[in-house]
Length: 390
Image (tube, rainbow, N blue to C red; front, side, top):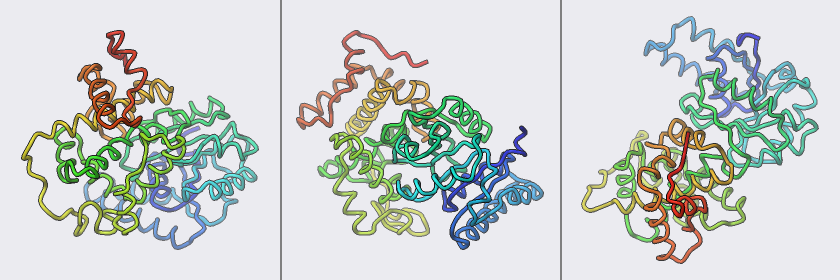
């Protein structure tokens, strides 16, 4: 079928659902955007109109294209209207029972060929598939916020998912202009798992009084990251980041590598959630941080080395556990979340022995399992090999 004949249903008209609807409409798909709230649907329409107006003003969209794009999205409060969809993506609140109810209701109205997907970032795709009558046509399609701007989509099959549906969704996401990577259904998938030390180790450094958030951010931007961990947590929302960290920590049976930070917990309790509340690790006015950036008064290489070694270690563990292929791991972290280099290739450049030595020093200093080196990394160093990525 041609794209203009394809129909996608999006359940949930919040920021994520509305963003996914915009992506699909931009590529010619017909979109049915469902929400129980007429007010949310109206707000979604108004926000899309504003986005389209800006794109027209900047010359990125013709007026006639703007009108056509908006007309391709039909908003509804009636679940029955999604019966004819080829693909339905659930993008509601991150709650298992809520998602279960929606997905089971969808199964009662759609045909056998409809693929059902969840945009969950932290729940078990296999667990959700397990409550369905036809789990083989269900999988995860994890977009990143804001969906129209973030290139990456993690395609996450449940253990019950038929591979033909995985291939179909990989093709559809490419046609939508996204960068899809296939991830194993484990806590955090690729990005939210591997990126945990970017936040967690930065928080640990500040907890210990070794550096300020300004200094850690400056150090990591000096290493090539577009944003430091504290700036990024404020952008994501400290409540959201903390919830993901807790979810991954609990899902991995309280592995100390993923332990949440008390600093972040206190920020959430205080309502200092970041840009959206005007205060997080920084204070904000009109969305811009107040105060002067940190001056480089000393050697911050140790900050970079500590955080990067933990990130690299996580990538080696993810590879060894089959979370994704080496190319997909690299693609997810560079093209998906804008890391300056793929962590595996970066480790090769450092020298795997250097990475291992950094981790061993941390483990010796703290005596914590948090800093245990990945077995794959140790094996490669012992055999004097670098990692073949492609």
